Amino acid sequence: MVQQKAREEQEAAGLVCPKACLCVRVPWPNAPPMVANARSILHRLAKGLHKLPPSRKQSAMKAARATATHALKVVSYQQRAESPCRSQVPGVTDESCATLCAVRASCPEVCACEEDKSDQADGHALKIEVDVSKKPKDWISGYYAWAWAEKPSNGTDGSNLGVQFSGDINVQGALHGVGAITMPCDDAQKGFCAGQMSFFTGTGKSKQEAKEAVLKQYADNCRSCLITRAEAAKLPKQQFSVQAGMWRGPQFLALGGGGTMWNVESLSGLTKGSSDIEAIKEAGFAGVCFDIEETEGEQELIDAFEQTFAMLQKEGLQVMITTSHSAPYEATSDESRIGLVDSWVASDNVDYLSPQLYTTGGEGAEFAASTGILGEVGYEHYLNAKKAKFVPSIVAETQVDEVREYFADKGLIVDGFIQWQQYGGGNEYDENGSPVVPEDPNEGKTPEEIAAEVNCMAHGIC
Image (tube, rainbow, N blue to C red):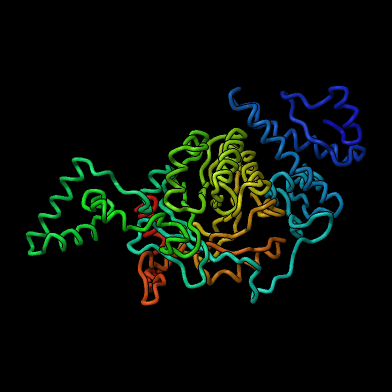
C-alpha cells in the first residue's frame, strides 16, 4: 500500500503500485485501524479477481481499485463517527461489521445497524431541507413517449423535455421505431402499398382518399412509396426539433432498455461523423438518452461510455442516462456496476441522471437501490455530481413530492423528473396550434394491467 505521507518520495523513487497489485491509499497511514481496514477491503476484493481470465483481469483490477478507494473513504467517515454496525454472530467483530458495511454500502446480515449513517460525511448528516411547494430553478418536467403506443405521450402544458423511447439499442432501429425514418420503398413495400391502394379504391374511395387511408394506417410502411417529392418537401424538417413545434420541449432519442445488453461493441456506431450521429441530428434530436440496465464489460466499457459521451457533446448533443433503480441490474461484476455509476456522476459530459424508481411501471415509487454480490449500490453514489442534473424517472407526476422528500433525506436535490406513464397527444393540435393532451389511456386500469401491457409491448413478455 502507498502511504499518503510518503507519496511524493515514493513516486520519485518509482515506488508506485504495480499493475499486478491491488492497492489503495490510506487517508491516515499512521492509524493502525485504517491500515487494517484497508487490508481487509483489498483482500475481499482480490478474492473475486483470482478466478478471472487474463483478458479481463486488467480492466477488473482498475474497477476494483476504484471500489477500494470508495470503500475506504466510507470507512474513514465511520472511524470519525461511531459506526452503526454491530456484530450479531460469534467470530465476527464490530470492526469487521464496519468494514463490511463500507464495502457493501449496506448493513450485511451478520451485522445489525442501530442507525443508518451511510448518508453522513465527516460526521455530519447529509440531510437537507426541501420545500416541496417550490420548484428549483430550471426544473425539468419530462416525459417518455412510447413508440409502440397509438398516441405517444406529448407531456402536459408544463412539460419541457421528452424522451422518445422504443427499447431498441441500435440507432437506426430506434429512429425507425419512433418514426424519425421510414422503411425504404423496395419491391416488397411497393407491392404491399399498391395492394392497400387497390383495396381502398375498391371500396369506392378516390385515389386521393385511398392514399390518405393507407398513410393513416401504414405511414411507416408506405410513406416513402406514396408521397411525391413535392409532398415530401412540405413535411416538417427535423420533426423532433424544438423549432418544428411538434413535441413539447427538446427531445432525446432513447437507446437501450431492459433486455438489451450494453458492451463496447454496442457503442461502435456512435463515433465522430458517423451516419448514426448525423441521422440523430437530422431528425432534430437535442440529445441521446442511454437506458443502461444490462452491461457486459469492466473498465474498458466504462471508458468506452465516457468517450462516447464526450464525442456526443462535441457534436452538439446532450447526454442523459437512465438505469434500473440506482445501477444496472446486470453487470459483469460489482466493481463495474459501481464504477459505471461513479463515472457518470464524475463526468463532464453527462447532463441528466435519471434512476428509474419503478420495476414494471405500474406501481408506486420504489426507492430500493440496485443490488449485487457485495450489497446495494446506494444512492449516496449520486452525491456531488460534477455536472448532471438529478431527474429520477417516476411512474407519475403525483409522486414528485414523495420523491423530493426521500432524496432530501439523503442529501440529494431533485432537479426534476421524467414521467413513464403516457398522456398521449403526439402530433395533434388544438385551435391555437398547441399540442393536444388527450385523456389518460391508462384510466380505469389497475397497476397490474398497466405493467402487463408495458412488458408485453416493450419487452415481448406477454
